[in-house]
Amino acid sequence: MLVKRIVALSVFGLLPIFAFSQIKEPQVQPSAGFQPVNVSTPQPSSFPQQDRRAAAPQYPNAPVRMGGTAGEIINSTNNSQSLAINTAVAQKQQEVQQLIRNIQAEQKHFGGKELAAYNRPTPNPERTKDFPAALKHLEDMLTGKTKLSVADAYYSVEAAYGNPYLTRQQYHDNIKESVAFIKTWMLENKLNPKDNYMVQYAIRKFMSETLTIYNGKNKRDHGAAIDMVSHNPYHYDYNDYTGEKDYRNLFLTKCLATGFGQCASMPIVYLVLAEALGVKAYLSFAPQHAFVKYPDNDGNIINYEPTSNWEITDKWYKDNMFISSDAVANGIYLDTLNSKQVVANCAFDLAIEYIKVDLTGNEDMILNCLKVGTRYFPKNNNLQSLFIYSMHLKTMLREEMRKNNITSLDDIERVPSAKKYYQEYLGTEAYIAKLGYQDMPAGMYEEMLNQQEFKGKIQKEYNVSGKDKRNLFSKTDQKKEP
Image 1 (cartoon, rainbow, N blue to C red):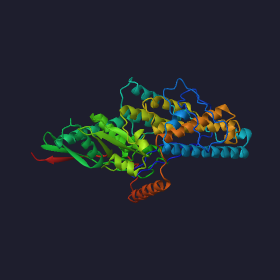
Image 2: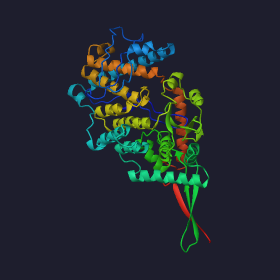
Image 3: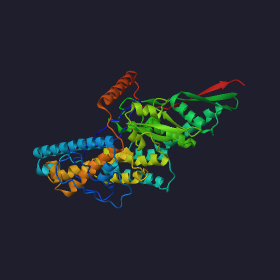
Image 4: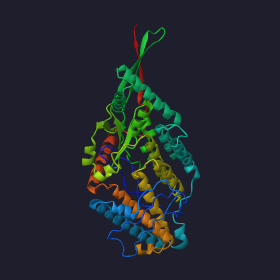
């Protein structure tokens, strides 16, 4: 079973950035597919006193390396980075030791053949059949075989998971109607639809306020009439905001269909509207959070929070959201993802969905998603892809330890396959730490969790589910005498 290591929280909303502390029970075989990390185990003083020479296996067909060798990581770090890396690696060693204890407990309880069959899920091809086609669609867009479209990418990913809130036609009709409304509102308010900043301003107003447009026209024998169309704003949904009960709560289709979302969906609404209106907008990340960046007419980058309708400076994020200077310099936070990178990031979202749907231990689809997406992050700084790969390595390590009855960290050295996964796992986690990633302090996490739960209770008191479909557009005819 897969369990989140991080349940994402922020003062604005939640973003599920996935890494895992527990891994799949079923036994899995090493995949012949994408294996992109080429790393050796870093060597902090807490390591067991044994032969620590690096294995550093090579993967010549891999399109990108998701880590680095031990020498590369250690030699390129300053003192503060080395401390962070050593701390991260020591923590992961402790987690591996806990895995060993869990395996021993299982063996004692089940033993032999019973253990091999323990809790093995039954494959459900019907549930996973649409994932390969969705990944192929993403790849075709990224390689130029199909027109690049953020809107199409997100729908493909959500449709693969199953039961999206809108049909494909309803989805595109919703976007089309929203774009037409924004254009009409701009004209009626004498805003230049060719002015980039004015278009961004209109999108913000559309998402955050109730707006009204008037379409004047003549009706035969009834004098002049005016169609008055209003659009209601989007709101934050505190009810199951992490998608634990229903993963679709994080979906773009859910936000469009209900008017309620969070930072996993509301920034994407903005990106889809910007794409359809022909203006640039970027996705950006802070710790466990996503928001929008866009250029003003002078080329300055504006940070915009669709969840709160705020403009916030990079300095505020750095000062208040536990963002290190290394994290900014390495681009894991506060960077700009262009449309192609947003679509590539959808491949990682697809991998997460597959992990939630298929529990049989098949890693090929997960690795294929990484293969498609990682090449569009040449700095190798997409945290979600690194977390997914680290989870894969830990899954494979556990299975090697179970098969080979490994009872201690020292025993890992005697099994080449286990040693390889162990070194890659610790190396990948060391690389993540080198990029500047830090776990959110426990007190800060608990405080934010309490804030979200409190707001969720208020939402329930007002009997607002945030899950019911509703049309954000309302139309009335106001008849005028000639």
